[in-house]
Image (cartoon, rainbow, N blue to C red; front, side, top):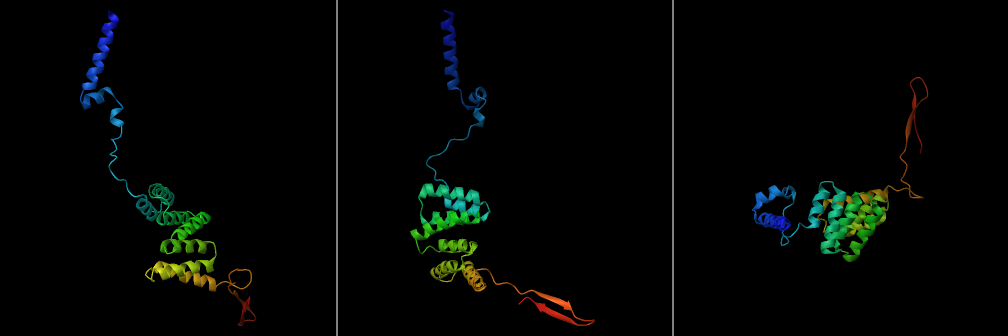
Length: 193
Protein backbone atom coordinates (compact mmCIF):
# COMPACT_ATOMS: atom_id res chain seq x y z
CA UNK A 1 0.00 0.00 0.00
CA UNK A 2 2.88 2.32 0.76
CA UNK A 3 4.35 1.78 -2.65
CA UNK A 4 1.16 2.73 -4.48
CA UNK A 5 0.88 5.87 -2.34
CA UNK A 6 4.43 6.98 -3.26
CA UNK A 7 3.76 6.32 -6.96
CA UNK A 8 0.55 8.35 -6.78
CA UNK A 9 2.39 11.19 -5.01
CA UNK A 10 5.14 11.20 -7.68
CA UNK A 11 2.58 11.24 -10.49
CA UNK A 12 0.69 14.13 -8.92
CA UNK A 13 3.96 16.08 -8.52
CA UNK A 14 4.84 15.50 -12.19
CA UNK A 15 1.33 16.56 -13.21
CA UNK A 16 1.54 19.72 -11.09
CA UNK A 17 4.97 20.56 -12.49
CA UNK A 18 3.66 20.31 -16.04
CA UNK A 19 0.83 22.71 -15.20
CA UNK A 20 3.00 25.37 -13.58
CA UNK A 21 3.45 28.65 -15.50
CA UNK A 22 6.88 29.89 -16.70
CA UNK A 23 8.64 31.42 -13.64
CA UNK A 24 7.64 28.65 -11.27
CA UNK A 25 8.77 26.06 -13.81
CA UNK A 26 12.09 27.91 -14.23
CA UNK A 27 12.58 27.76 -10.47
CA UNK A 28 12.33 23.98 -10.63
CA UNK A 29 14.68 23.78 -13.66
CA UNK A 30 17.84 25.87 -13.03
CA UNK A 31 19.13 25.52 -16.64
CA UNK A 32 15.95 26.91 -18.23
CA UNK A 33 17.16 30.52 -17.99
CA UNK A 34 20.30 29.69 -19.99
CA UNK A 35 18.55 28.17 -22.99
CA UNK A 36 18.55 30.17 -26.23
CA UNK A 37 15.31 31.50 -27.67
CA UNK A 38 13.51 29.43 -30.24
CA UNK A 39 14.49 29.96 -33.88
CA UNK A 40 11.86 31.17 -36.27
CA UNK A 41 12.26 28.97 -39.35
CA UNK A 42 10.19 31.35 -41.45
CA UNK A 43 12.78 34.14 -41.18
CA UNK A 44 15.32 34.63 -43.95
CA UNK A 45 19.01 34.67 -42.95
CA UNK A 46 21.47 37.38 -43.98
CA UNK A 47 23.09 36.82 -47.37
CA UNK A 48 26.53 35.21 -47.01
CA UNK A 49 27.96 37.40 -49.80
CA UNK A 50 26.87 40.56 -48.02
CA UNK A 51 28.36 39.36 -44.73
CA UNK A 52 31.56 38.37 -46.53
CA UNK A 53 31.89 41.76 -48.24
CA UNK A 54 31.49 43.55 -44.91
CA UNK A 55 34.09 41.30 -43.31
CA UNK A 56 36.49 41.98 -46.19
CA UNK A 57 36.07 45.74 -45.61
CA UNK A 58 36.85 45.15 -41.93
CA UNK A 59 40.02 43.22 -42.81
CA UNK A 60 38.66 39.89 -41.50
CA UNK A 61 39.60 37.86 -44.56
CA UNK A 62 39.42 34.38 -43.00
CA UNK A 63 35.92 35.04 -41.64
CA UNK A 64 34.91 36.53 -44.99
CA UNK A 65 36.06 33.36 -46.72
CA UNK A 66 33.83 31.30 -44.40
CA UNK A 67 30.89 33.58 -45.16
CA UNK A 68 31.54 33.16 -48.90
CA UNK A 69 31.56 29.38 -48.51
CA UNK A 70 28.23 29.65 -46.69
CA UNK A 71 26.92 31.71 -49.62
CA UNK A 72 28.17 28.99 -51.97
CA UNK A 73 26.20 26.40 -50.01
CA UNK A 74 23.07 28.56 -50.22
CA UNK A 75 23.36 29.89 -53.79
CA UNK A 76 25.71 27.50 -55.53
CA UNK A 77 29.10 28.30 -57.04
CA UNK A 78 28.04 31.19 -59.26
CA UNK A 79 30.39 33.82 -60.66
CA UNK A 80 29.77 36.24 -57.76
CA UNK A 81 30.67 33.62 -55.15
CA UNK A 82 33.72 32.39 -57.07
CA UNK A 83 35.04 35.92 -57.51
CA UNK A 84 34.49 36.69 -53.83
CA UNK A 85 36.29 33.51 -52.72
CA UNK A 86 39.17 34.34 -55.06
CA UNK A 87 39.50 37.88 -53.69
CA UNK A 88 39.55 36.55 -50.09
CA UNK A 89 42.23 34.03 -51.05
CA UNK A 90 44.23 36.86 -52.64
CA UNK A 91 44.05 38.93 -49.45
CA UNK A 92 45.16 35.89 -47.44
CA UNK A 93 48.18 35.46 -49.73
CA UNK A 94 46.96 32.17 -51.20
CA UNK A 95 47.89 33.13 -54.73
CA UNK A 96 47.64 29.68 -56.32
CA UNK A 97 44.18 29.05 -54.89
CA UNK A 98 43.05 32.56 -55.80
CA UNK A 99 44.22 32.11 -59.38
CA UNK A 100 42.39 28.79 -59.77
CA UNK A 101 39.11 30.11 -58.35
CA UNK A 102 39.24 33.35 -60.34
CA UNK A 103 39.92 31.45 -63.57
CA UNK A 104 36.81 29.36 -62.80
CA UNK A 105 34.84 32.58 -62.33
CA UNK A 106 36.05 33.96 -65.67
CA UNK A 107 35.21 30.65 -67.33
CA UNK A 108 31.67 30.95 -65.94
CA UNK A 109 31.35 34.59 -67.12
CA UNK A 110 34.16 36.05 -69.25
CA UNK A 111 32.68 39.56 -68.87
CA UNK A 112 32.64 39.71 -65.06
CA UNK A 113 34.81 42.75 -64.33
CA UNK A 114 35.68 42.07 -60.63
CA UNK A 115 37.00 38.59 -61.47
CA UNK A 116 39.10 39.94 -64.35
CA UNK A 117 40.56 42.69 -62.16
CA UNK A 118 41.27 40.35 -59.24
CA UNK A 119 42.95 37.78 -61.51
CA UNK A 120 45.12 40.60 -62.84
CA UNK A 121 46.08 41.44 -59.24
CA UNK A 122 47.01 37.81 -58.55
CA UNK A 123 49.18 37.72 -61.67
CA UNK A 124 50.86 40.99 -60.68
CA UNK A 125 51.74 39.50 -57.29
CA UNK A 126 53.31 36.55 -59.12
CA UNK A 127 55.36 38.86 -61.37
CA UNK A 128 53.45 37.90 -64.52
CA UNK A 129 52.96 41.48 -65.68
CA UNK A 130 52.15 40.83 -69.36
CA UNK A 131 49.29 38.47 -68.56
CA UNK A 132 48.08 40.78 -65.77
CA UNK A 133 48.06 43.69 -68.21
CA UNK A 134 45.86 41.70 -70.58
CA UNK A 135 43.26 41.03 -67.86
CA UNK A 136 43.35 44.63 -66.65
CA UNK A 137 42.78 45.83 -70.23
CA UNK A 138 39.78 43.51 -70.59
CA UNK A 139 38.35 44.67 -67.25
CA UNK A 140 38.92 48.34 -68.11
CA UNK A 141 37.25 47.98 -71.52
CA UNK A 142 34.24 46.10 -70.11
CA UNK A 143 33.90 48.69 -67.33
CA UNK A 144 34.02 51.48 -69.96
CA UNK A 145 36.87 53.12 -68.07
CA UNK A 146 34.66 54.00 -65.08
CA UNK A 147 36.88 52.49 -62.39
CA UNK A 148 39.92 54.41 -61.19
CA UNK A 149 41.18 51.29 -59.42
CA UNK A 150 41.27 49.24 -62.62
CA UNK A 151 42.94 52.11 -64.52
CA UNK A 152 45.60 52.40 -61.80
CA UNK A 153 46.18 48.63 -61.88
CA UNK A 154 46.59 48.78 -65.66
CA UNK A 155 49.07 51.66 -65.38
CA UNK A 156 51.07 49.76 -62.77
CA UNK A 157 51.21 46.62 -64.95
CA UNK A 158 52.40 48.66 -67.94
CA UNK A 159 55.04 50.43 -65.83
CA UNK A 160 56.33 47.15 -64.42
CA UNK A 161 56.56 45.67 -67.91
CA UNK A 162 58.56 48.66 -69.14
CA UNK A 163 60.96 48.46 -66.19
CA UNK A 164 61.96 44.89 -66.95
CA UNK A 165 65.52 44.55 -68.21
CA UNK A 166 66.67 42.39 -71.07
CA UNK A 167 67.67 38.81 -70.50
CA UNK A 168 66.39 36.63 -67.73
CA UNK A 169 63.49 38.86 -66.64
CA UNK A 170 65.23 40.65 -63.77
CA UNK A 171 64.44 44.31 -63.24
CA UNK A 172 66.86 46.85 -64.68
CA UNK A 173 69.60 47.75 -62.26
CA UNK A 174 69.57 51.30 -60.88
CA UNK A 175 72.80 53.22 -61.53
CA UNK A 176 74.92 53.79 -58.45
CA UNK A 177 77.08 56.88 -58.10
CA UNK A 178 80.01 57.60 -55.83
CA UNK A 179 82.04 60.73 -55.25
CA UNK A 180 85.85 60.28 -55.20
CA UNK A 181 88.33 62.93 -54.07
CA UNK A 182 91.11 63.51 -56.66
CA UNK A 183 92.96 66.40 -55.08
CA UNK A 184 92.72 69.12 -52.46
CA UNK A 185 89.61 70.66 -54.04
CA UNK A 186 88.87 68.27 -56.92
CA UNK A 187 86.20 65.54 -56.93
CA UNK A 188 85.17 63.04 -59.56
CA UNK A 189 81.72 61.46 -59.93
CA UNK A 190 81.92 57.71 -60.72
CA UNK A 191 79.09 55.50 -61.96
CA UNK A 192 78.69 51.75 -62.30
CA UNK A 193 77.37 52.11 -65.88
